[in-house]
Length: 445
Image 1 (cartoon, rainbow, N blue to C red):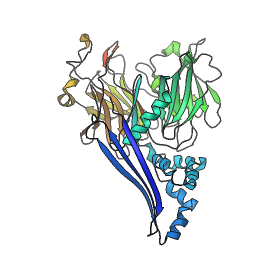
Image 2: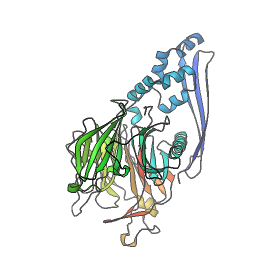
Image 3: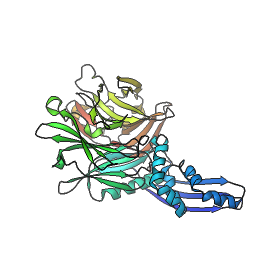
Image 4: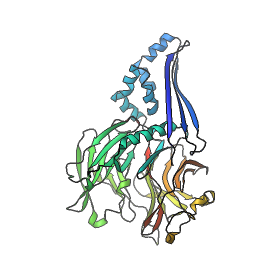
């Protein structure tokens, strides 16, 4: 399993005899040996302002406008630490105005994925994509454990640093919450008044664009039993109210099970869902209406799309589709911004992987004999950041690895228990992890 981590911290702030304001935090972390070469680590975060005299330094330290300007350029996790410097700093950083401004100003820089929540129900673990970031791993795993508090996770999705969590209680009721795991804040989301049975809810999808607003929306997809239609309602954090769309998805015409509502992705002001055999769906949150969305092609001699991954990264919508499942050769599609169609951004060939990891050739895996697959892996996530550094996070039997598509380098991130196989009409598939991206934000819930 992914290792537990432990963290301690200390801090100090002072103006030295040369008129330099120093605010220093020192952190020491340790981690178990099953995450390779990551036994201990220390780091130091400092803010230094050089001025002619200590009097001037004290003046700047108490100047709210200057401090605010400096603090706006720090990442959220550092700001939470700096709240302990003084009551003055705490009042600035914790104010709603500062948090809204910081969230909007840092929307693009904070959009870089710092880690992933990996789920293989009922276990959830946070995995950092930055090898030095063990304090975040520890904090996230601890907070996630406290959030659960004995409840059963029924569903989850994330959007730009916020999480929408679906809990199922022992009496059958379901509760929905929005969480900011960096700040520890949460908000209970009531069901729309049109829903009298919690099991009618198919999904709650979070829609949050910090560049446009500090508020977020929650798109609820629910079943109207009498009409056999999926209906759409939108909750606004700004008003605390639900509004209902006139749009609907006809289950009699398309069938509702095939549409992947649990994997809705917010991008370009809309929530998107994909389907293995039917149409793709795009729901514009602002005006509660559908937008036309083209599908990817179904390969010849096949009756469905083998969709391995669907998500947003770097301001673009991506989909990974296998021609055969599983296959070490596949395409990564990207949707045109104007929705005119999908194009192949990358063609990936991982034929070399089984030589490096022979366990992928399922000799000892407990796969059904009638489906003797030789390439045992699943794609957890595709990351294509602003530095044009394309990476694939892959789940192999016993390991999670990060493959850099630009230079071919492989980094082993964690040792995990081998997964099982799921049986489908077209064969058995290696059951990897469900994945939810995490970025840092001070956004209020």
